[in-house]
Image (cartoon, rainbow, N blue to C red; front, side, top):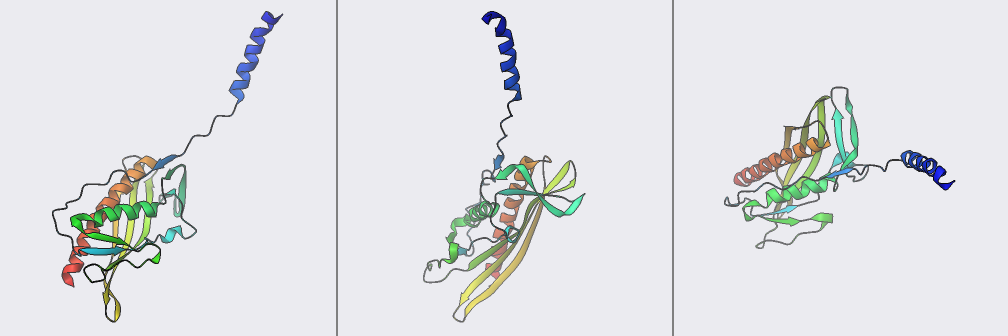
Length: 213
């Protein structure tokens, strides 16, 4: 009897296994990858700088690790998020650390003013303050199978005078980089490349601003 039931039991067990739900796929987590090498042989101007918390106006509802994309060919005014992909940290934090990497080239001292903390003086002077606002950081599809990374950053440089703070300069940087693939992986890589290009432009602008003071 037991032998006759064995095939039936096996069939029932197999059917039960096939009816079990498939475990949910873990979302892929991305960062900006390894930072590019910088030229440390060129003297940095200014020699010291205060970097405040970066602002991200599009994160007004609270910081999130969502990866954003836009279907410009179909829904140009809607911002979407990938359901199976995210950043390892809130993107504004990843951007701030990558830009700190670029700003630190040439042995520049980059101080932190996170949380409104007043940084120390350097050589008896208060270094200029750099305020950054990340206005755009997303993957944009102009066609279903083609996308680009778009990064836009507003930089404001403030100096200290006996009468108070003065505006030393302000510049908006905008970089667009094609993505190698029309997916989250391609978008993450393209955003990293765009940010590195923007970092180089930011460093050059700081040098020019210092030369004009």
